[in-house]
Image 1 (cartoon, rainbow, N blue to C red):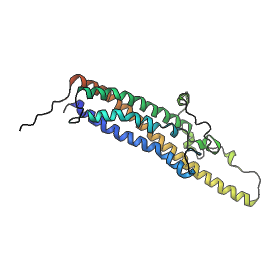
Image 2 (cartoon, rainbow, N blue to C red):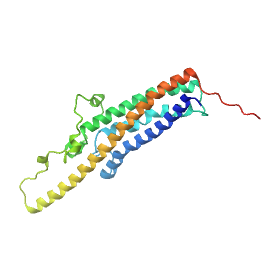
Image 3 (cartoon, rainbow, N blue to C red):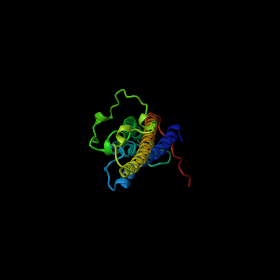
Image 4 (spheres, rainbow, N blue to C red):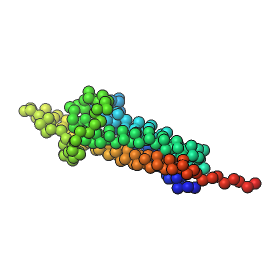
Length: 228
């Protein structure tokens, strides 16, 4: 087995694990939203999970290269120069998908969940547009996550009211704080994970482009014929 075949096999299995992990991460806030609200896209945790960075970018766009890399490994059905070339070519799609996943994840980490930016988790601004993915010299400080509350305190201070109303407001405030903490934790965990997945897929994709091209030029190891 040549070093190109060994690295191709490693890349194939690594990409398979990463794409499955990316899909699972992307699905977590969608499932939480479905359980909390009873239907999808009703008061979502954020807009960004609905742009499917893990399901499309880190998932579906990585499937062709993963299949080609696994098929081009030693003793696989496509273990030849053509298989190596295809594994190199299809990983260009992997790189594009990984970059999309990274850009959406970074934008999501900069913006924070909807509960920090939109009253009532309004999804009115959740329409997809490539312009919204751009990061325009924003500081990567994650204040929405590090602060105790990402919502202005003035929005939670009730006006003068009687004891019954005040108790109701206190209960509502505690429920809101719990929901805010939950959404912040899920949002940070999911998109931090997707950012790491995107970076790793980018590295594996670029390396397979190089290794696949070298394998196409140098060839693969010959299969030993069985002596009957």
